[in-house]
Length: 123
Image (cartoon, rainbow, N blue to C red; front, side, top):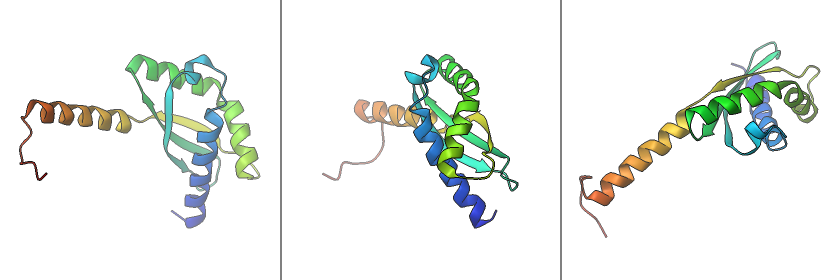
């Protein structure tokens, strides 16, 4: 992938993260939504945006519906900020990496508090 496409992908990701904070849809507004990564196609027509939602699977599905509903407005906002001739069409994909990482951290914390996590304290 070219450096220009990487730079544009990064700009789209930042602009989208900022624009999502202004979405008025209640499905999106009350949730912890993070843009994990964006991949813009070589022709700059599409941007695949990986979204992570901290919460239940049902809440994540509702957030995704809200984002798809607001996609046109988000596309316009991203287009204004990134200043491309054509704003890329936003395609949202749910990414479970942050939720998965939080779960692993929680399990490790429980194991440590129960004294079942191996290793000695160095303090």
